[in-house]
Length: 293
Image (cartoon, rainbow, N blue to C red; front, side, top):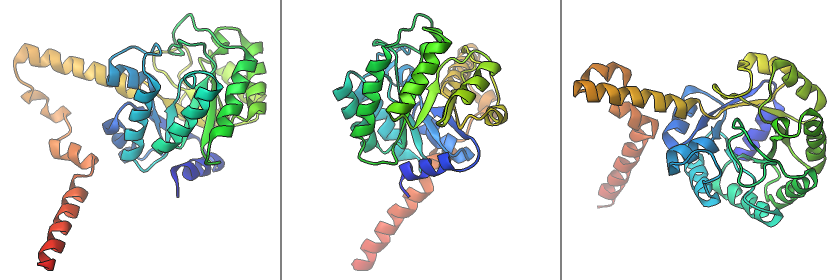
């Protein structure tokens, strides 16, 4: 089953899809090994960890696509990828969708921020007019070659133009062909419930530990009616904290020996990336060659 088909199946089945955020192949492999049904390629994490910039639209489409391809090639579970604003006008969006399809991801989300965009939980965002975004959505839907490829549309209007405009956008984006919606920076549990009540397509919730939205757990979100929840910053924010403490300890004590119990053993880390399978395959090639001789 293709990843796109598997993700559509998840969307049609009961229950919420929990997709923790990965910024590289290792974090994606850990997410898969833990048993989650999907992984989210975080744009913020890609920007911070892969190119060394804050989430201010400095990651190019090429850089995002390269990371998406690496992550999708590492895991078997479906990958949802951040595609920012689609990287331009309607023709750019068409190309963006086709290029993301080639990476092997199962779904993307595009958003209605003006360029240059910024993290949805920062201040001073701007959004494009509704008509401009609906044109992009129609271009995205028209561009996909796989009907199972899922197009999630994000709106950042709540913090910019308010509730009424956000609801107008949800209606317009659904009409334009969005498979699912992502209302960014929801401000309360009551607002979350109202978004669910007012929309007719699957909804994605963005769980950002230090962001603007309430930290509703997965069960609460499922009860409210959300179909997907992503945790984009959990891994890279935890890594920043943990590695920071590790380096302080190393600088202070001149050794990390006392921290061994807090580390994944080297071979176990390699196993996450398929060590035994690769060694067995390599040995099989050697046996075949010896048999031929």
